[in-house]
Amino acid sequence: MTAMTTSYYIYYKVPPEREVQLKPAVEELQRLLAARTGVKGRLLCRRDKPETWMEVYEPVAEDTEFLATLEAELERVRFAELLGTDVPRHIEIFRSEEHTSELQSRLHLVCRLLLE
Image (cartoon, rainbow, N blue to C red; front, side, top):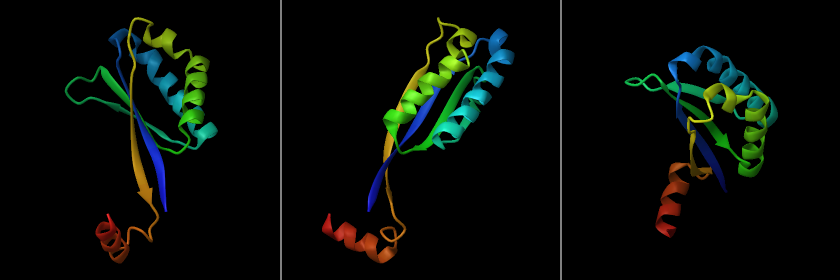
């Protein structure tokens, strides 16, 4: 059995003067998303350019519900106001297939490859 899941990668540049206010807002956003959707987020900062932040949310099983919840919680924490309306947020969404452990066994994998 195959289930489709998606991963959300959201990145943006944080003006240095807004970093102190924005980090707690991102942490609150991720706490709220985890409580409402069960999807735990991670916050990463680019090693060579620490002003570039990326939020990672995975695995997301219900795209439409997650996106609607994300938008609602962004409003709740006043994210655009804290980041700055002139700073773009980029959202990349990747999908993947997840197989049950039975289908990932060596025998089933070989059979599946032969059938494909």
